Length: 215
Image 1 (cartoon, helix red, strand yellow):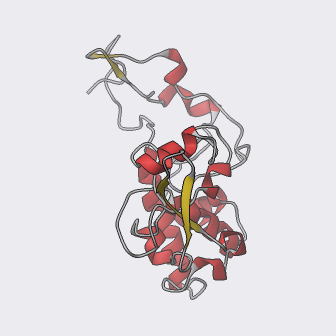
Image 2: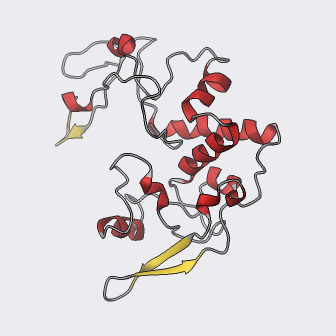
């Protein structure tokens, strides 16, 4: 295929593109390495390792006045539930209650940067349903806590370098920008590549938060 539909340039073997939620696979591998080394137990509540996740609430919906209805979570999710999207954590753009909570300002905007949006309530009790969501972002926090490394550093040391994956990173090195493939949105049926959607160089280690679920 082509790297730019507006001025066709063939995709090269070394073209670098955004893997988005495929980051979840890398985070899961990192967590399972720590399981293999005996540092994480898949089946105990993760607040054992992350006390900041204690006291979770489940958002049941909203009453007639638009006020949120909560119940206490029976327990924190396990690492296995974070990995398998059965933790109760969801995405606001696919879950109505989570979307409304964000719209009402109860939860920071998912696209607002930083990591405050991780503080969202659960959408259901852990282990009772499946729904795609931010659980693997919390898994990334767990990897950082247990390993003592920032997520990108752990990925680099334990996954990317051993596999010679030198073109996989969060911050985009300036010297590789010429090989980048931008995000191409389709607007009114036409595939384009707006300038603002293209990758921009950034200094390694400069990001405040590495999302284990994407980025």
